[in-house]
Image (cartoon, rainbow, N blue to C red; front, side):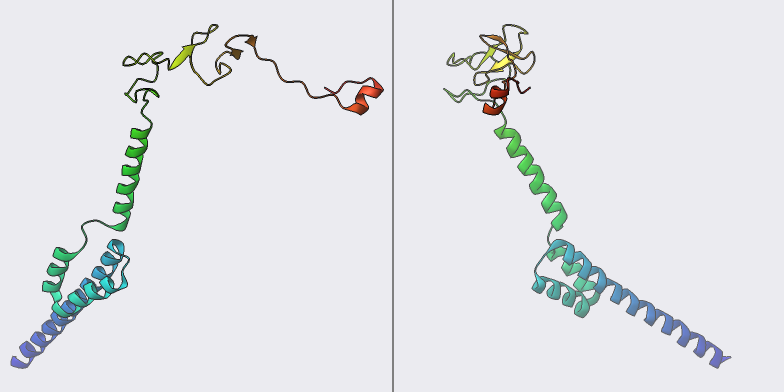
Length: 165
């Protein structure tokens, strides 16, 4: 009976030892993959993995304290968000004369009375001052509808009396 109990204890201890070794190995592998997601420095990979390899669970706790707060993917997403916010801030409309913020559909700056846009005489849409045609109705501000430019007539077609279309 004692030999059976001793054998059973040996088997249980062997399984517990194998489990602890597997758990320790899994911690080392997890640490390696986690630090790779958080840093690009090879020395940091080695240091973090060695920390868990040597100090086991205490090394893992120490790694949790020392590891970078965000992954590389999270840092990249945050930088994209910041860049989008900066672009949005740059896209805000300002008066070219006084640099005060104005709304997109203002005709005049309320601060310095600088003309910002003009209305199309045909369709009443707002036009930028540098536009020479209304993109909504196709009319130029002064002369009416814009026509397609004609192609130049070549010398050969002129002689033969035919026009190029």
